[in-house]
Length: 261
Image 1 (tube, rainbow, N blue to C red):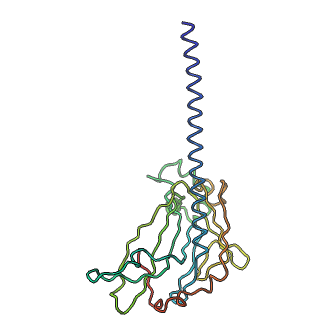
Image 2: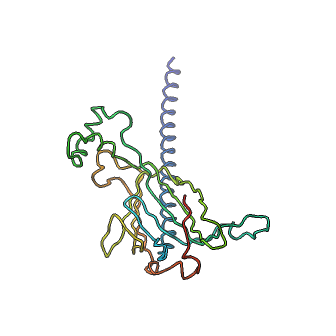
Image 3: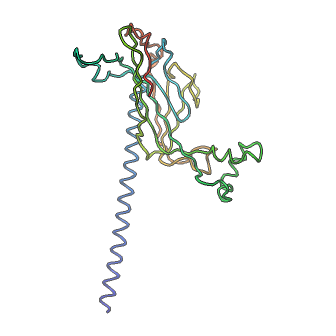
């Protein structure tokens, strides 16, 4: 009996440390994936923003808010535009080497279900007191509280309208959820030496600050600053991007249109 008790204790201790090691390994792998996702997004966004430009004819360039950005960038046309067209094939719509790209933070409501829960009201009471003017507007203020859930990317092709073609055709491009491991995304724009939370465009700014976070903005500091760890990078946009024009390289670009996603 004594040997059985000792053996059981040793096995229980070994299983405990094994579970701790397995949990630590899973947490480490998940943290590595999150860091890799943040690095890949920052690298890709940096590369695309450095290729952004302003199209003066179509008045398309760079614009954005605190949690989204949209910009025109140069890109190699799709493979279909390089394919030799046969007589039996329908004519391909002419495509230029430009893309309209949009990154945005996908949000979801903080509170789900009924808003009559007293605990939920107590949790957001100090937040709604700053944005609610009358007591009857409490429900509307609570509904408007959102927090980050994922990061989406949308890309549209810039097409050229010519006399020999038909009307502009709609190209359906669904938003791509590039990651759901990062719940926080924030942009700031360099405007005459001052960082602003929004950029009206269409001229590109001199720099864009991108901040990524693993955890969403918590319910207790939605109206305050983000206090969790962030992955931050300042992307410098070449000053010549503001003077680049798509019309200088394509004589037919004055009739360019964006394919509706």
